[in-house]
Length: 390
Image (cartoon, rainbow, N blue to C red; front, side, top):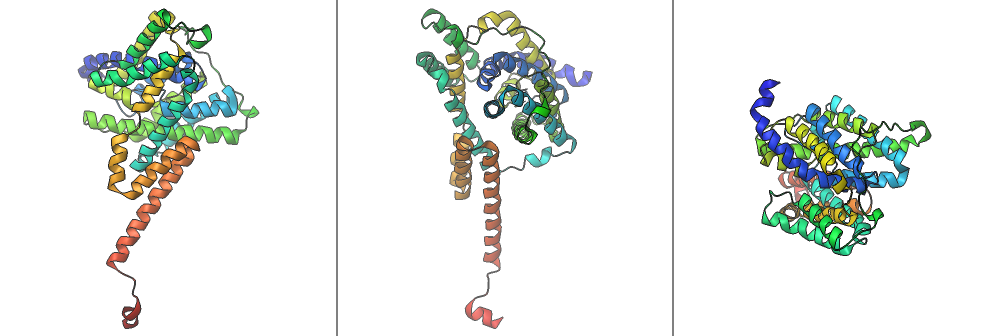
């Protein structure tokens, strides 16, 4: 253990601190978006950040609440209420543990790239449209926040543009655009979250299990995609099955305390690696710094306008789609364009699981027809005189 930690400790400390400043505004935003509250988002980031760093299969990966997962949680809360939401999060973690134990992680990576691109694009649309209620609270503050989220990365990608956006937006609110008490984040208590085990017997377990499976598949897919990005940046190879298992352990624990569950987060993991993080300590340090930030700046965080957090998520949503990859794949083949378009629309309009299933089906049929056409070109079916000769 000592050999694994010491050579990367300096980089892990710098990486963990850097990521914490990126993760805090996003955790607050995703907590508010889910309906569980800002505290559930922050403590969810702390819980999943620590546990996935210990048990996960990617050393430099940072886990926490993400946009795609939170969008699904919103629909779960609307359908089943908070008890159903907590139950589905717990079951999501359990299903991920089962997938890890059964070593199914490597098969999840077989989902075609066009499907994942379309899925990401659709999630971005969902996140953007879900923030209109916060935009209406203060169009000016929200618009300024969106602009900062888009402009600051153009100046320097390494600056913590999300936290800067939140600070600027909060200061503008305090001096120029005062907000009512119900339009700000509110108190974020420094506490140990309490157990919130729901009464599973009082629920429609078919619906809750389906919701949990949806969250588990989404979490596994996102985490493994993030793991592959980390692999490319660090020239390492992650353990897919251990990664899914680690995410499952973290999400089961987080769900039991009513915290927002998470996945491997590409943006936060990239920040960690670029700052020098290479080991498991970076994720743990990021979580400890989050606790410190809440302890020191909790009162200030309580004054953050929801319109500013809405702007942060809207800006994130605009940056989220894989524009270049969508164009590249669409130019490469018409089939990829169809898959991306269909998956994007179905994700935004119908259902995430259904969108992925249809996207995979179209991709499979496209591959089948391609193989069949290649076979027929090499061994054409006899017709006319050729058939008589045979």
